[in-house]
Length: 279
Image (cartoon, rainbow, N blue to C red; front, side, top):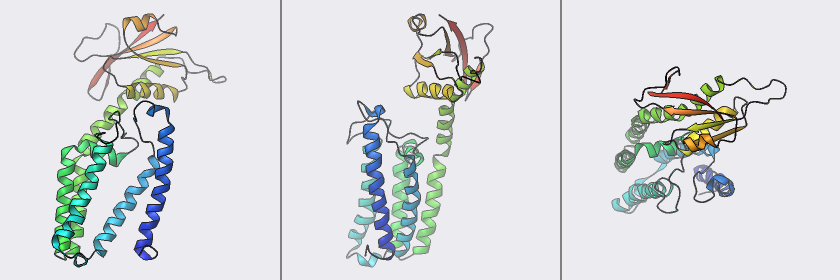
């Protein structure tokens, strides 16, 4: 019944989804950050589909008639096993990188809340999802649609509440290096108001930093008008051979006493010092 009513709406969503899928695949395939192994699927606009999918699920819950299935086992195979299997396949593909080799970091929390949230929950994601599916499908089979709807809503609230603390911690971690970029900008003269020229600098990060932290420092400084920036991992040799006259070393203390005369910057339960260096 794809030409009318609810079936037509589902068909339209699938058609729009296909167009977005082609656009996102083309964009991500051609992006430099996916050069050796895929490292990101960029498409923040896809978040609209989360709302559409959830709306479709609620309407389906009201419209579905378990009597359409010849046996109870066929009903549960379709609504429980197949549905859970599709989600599991998506999980091992996108998060575990088990189907298509990736660098293991496809989902970015600032671009894919639902996907990243799934990753944060870990094994609890499967437990919660299986229980929500099982309870809802059982109530539908017993023709208790209103109770099934209530169970689905409560289950969804529990699902999103369960991972909230971990997501809050992840957001704080993400803000650490942008915050440090702000502190470095305070140690520099502001860009020239007419030409926009600013000092060329090199920023040296702790050895245990990630490539994402390098991008966060770079982006944090660029948004403040400082565009000629080199970001490197700290070593004595790197400081000696830096390409700029001025630089800053970010040192994570981790219980180490800071150098005398240097202020300590504390953020997200971590302590840092920023050491100015000259070539």
